[in-house]
Image (cartoon, rainbow, N blue to C red; front, top):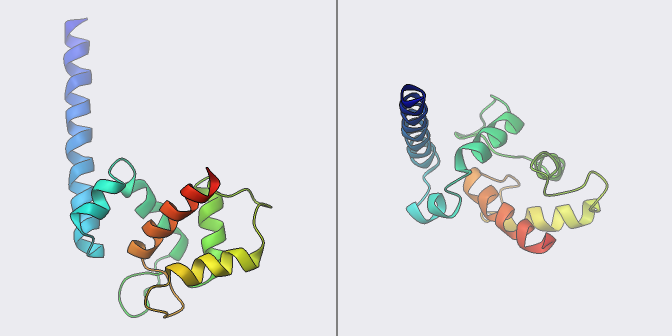
Length: 124
């Protein structure tokens, strides 16, 4: 049993190390501040993977970005922050516009993290 406990401990240490390395990679790649990562510490990698999966592999002008309200709706449904029939498209458009900080019609990952925080507050 002691050998099993040691193995589980070693696996947990390896997982924690890999997760930290991945968080640092996301932070560097997306230009996130330490506060951004700390606020989403337990989920930044999960959110990033979901985000990049939604935007696909095509890159326009650098880093991938969500390009419309429907993509945001899909992401919020995937993250269980929105019921499939829960919000009108005008509300999604409004939230999209609010977090499109540079008004370029796209939401980068940092803007997406802010949007997720806002939606979580709204649904509570």
